[in-house]
Image (tube, rainbow, N blue to C red; front, top):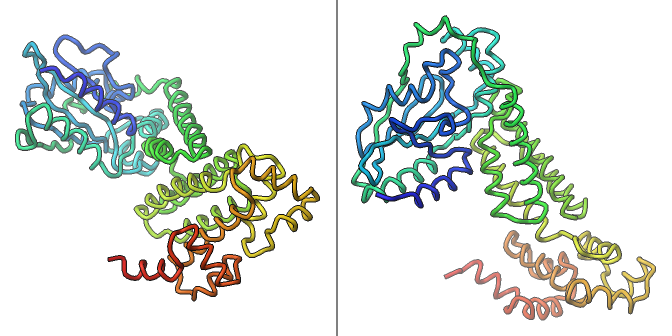
Length: 413
């Protein structure tokens, strides 16, 4: 069966997890097919290479079964048997990845259990930092199950099997070899460069308000394991949140968002970060932050505007209840009203009055959705104290009156 196109598609999906599918068979197991991370068992002996793991495992692998393996080193692997057009069998391998952050304390316990030498500690730590971290493997398994369902003819055509603490090699007899092999320092450098490049791409995506791209890059970034600065998992999560908040501040500043908007949002998230009570809530907050900072750029970026118009837009955003008439703004900025009017229309595509009214009504819609304030008060908070003019302007822009809008919120059906 030819499913190369499907394999290529799955590989693209797995890139967000920093994973891919590697194919092994009896004759083709060159190093180029091995995952760059290899397998942690190789720290003990070369006999524990993935090629030998394959040889030990192949006889146990049956068709139409997806094997989920944990290897006793807190790493997880997925293996299943495929058949090509000529009828030859080969293994599809995905991994390794972890489902929990690996702290120094955890590595110490593993070192005691497997008698790793002290010289290997930093290399083992680097290995785990490089290994993708998937706190929830649901999406990964969905990708694999969908692929298998397609090539095998349906979800009812295959099953799954789990192996716990799978040891394909007799480690006790190999302990005398430990310490001779480790992760190349160049690999460590490339790993860090890869993570920083992903961060750079994330900043660039946020700075241009590209929500889907930013979310995809953030999903990729979360697969990297960052250094644990505390044995407290919640404190580590908060540390990551603080780092992310800083990165996103830089991103939106690059997107020419006025500083007061940035400060307002980042300060709000600073409070939310410290109020976070669980790692799950922290993970959800990270995703929210990426999206909200992208929206900040989309709604408030001044890229492409002249300095004069930037000052006008900033003044409008800063206080919608102020006198935002053409004459007053021109006086404040020491420019000719006619010149300001012409330049504003040229750069924004609307007149100053149209733009200000649009912003005020948008704020009114927000208040109608988020408060129980009387419409007269909403008009004042939106900078249009004349309730009749407010109602007329609201209907012109939204299509219905403020009262009709609120009634629809209260009775959507």
